[in-house]
View 1 (cartoon, rainbow, N blue to C red):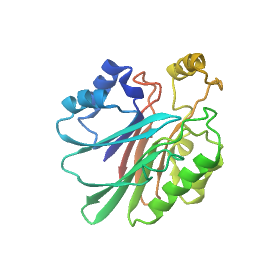
View 2 (cartoon, helix red, strand yellow):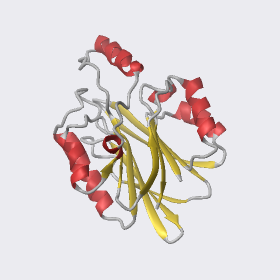
View 3 (cartoon, helix red, strand yellow):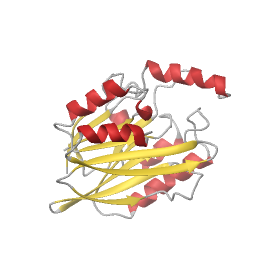
Length: 238
C-alpha cells in the first residue's frame, strides 16, 4: 500500500499540485492533506474519482481555520473517527481512520499541529496535543500510521514522546534532511508584514510515525515545489 501526507498550502501551487496528485493517484491508496480548503478540494475531487473524501474543519480565533482532507481509494473499508475534539482550541487537529484489511486492522491519523508560535518548539499546547494523539492511538488494536504537519522541530520533547512510545520516526530513520523547500522561507518572511516573527530557516515540520508491526518498504520525501511543504510518501505492508 501507499499513503502520501502533505500540507498543500491551500493550493497556492495549484497546477503543479494537481499534476502531482494525478500522477501519483495511479499507485496511491490514500492521500492525507492539511491546509486543504473547500476550493482546492473541489479540484482534487475531479482528478480522484476513484477515491472517497473525508473533510474536517475547525476554527480557532487566534489561528484561523484548520482544514483537512483525506482521500481513500473506494475499495478500502474506512471508518472515520475524530481524535482531537473540535471544541478544544488549545490543540490542532487529528483525524483517525480505521481500515479493515482482511484479518488486520490499520489506523491512520492525519495530523495538523498547532502552528503558533512559529518557533516550532515545545509549549503546553503542543505537549497536550502529542499526549492526545498518543493516548487515542493506544486505545486501538492494530497497526498505526501517524503523519502530517506537526509544526515541530526534531529535537522537541513532543517528537521524542512518539519515539519513547515505540513508534518508528521515519524522518529520523531515513535521515531525511528537510521536509520544507525554498517557498517555506519566502512565505515566513511575507508573514512578517502581518506582525509575525521570522524564526529563520526551519527545515522540518512534517513527520510520519509507524508502529513496529508496519513493514516499511520505502519512504521518501521528494524535493518538489507543489507546496511550501514536501510530500511524505510511504510504501508499506502490514
